[in-house]
Image 1: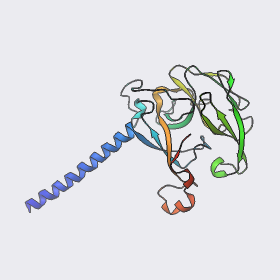
Image 2 (image 1 turned 45 degrees about the vertical axis):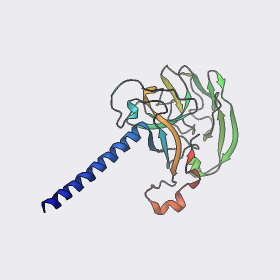
Image 3 (image 1 turned 180 degrees about the horizontal axis):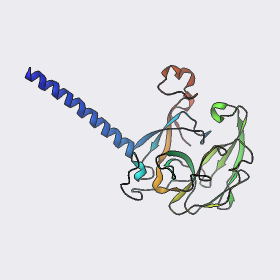
Image 4 (image 1 turned 180 degrees about the vertical axis):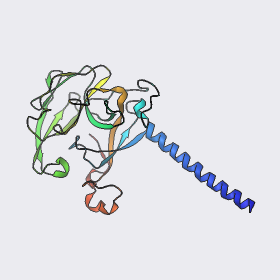
Length: 247
């Protein structure tokens, strides 16, 4: 009986050890390599939709306190840091409340002057090319029960992406000129009339707040359904979005 008891004890100990090792491995992967992230709002439509699940590359911009769970104050600045490029889609800690993760597109780099005039983006006094390319009449993409204009912007470095224009002459279509401070970035959502971004309460985003770059959508489900509701997959999963790159 003593031998059997020792075997049972050893079996439990081994199971606990395996679980701990698996959790530590998952923590290392999440902290230093990839972090899964779900899209909670429509601010990045049409690029990202509510119900999209994507992987964020953690090493893209180096590491800061924002790289770690719960944002612990371990050190200042970034290590192995590199700058994001204009047009990158980035997850970052919301400056007024760092416990919240936001996802937007990098529009302005340190020293840039950014302004919206009549719905057109200006960088350093020059208009960013903006072309009306189509209309979308799909509430799953636009959240509107009517056709919505889609514009394609092309940044000075050649990065091109689509934006929605839900409301002509909205509050965010005309702004003051923002001058991005050193060590900060100017972020905007692709859904220009429905995005809380650097034009509003987000403000300039410090480099220390960057979590990582959005890379690939690995799952997407519509209708506010949970991925765990497998019975809804045949009708609600957006199969065309699975394993697509974030542009």
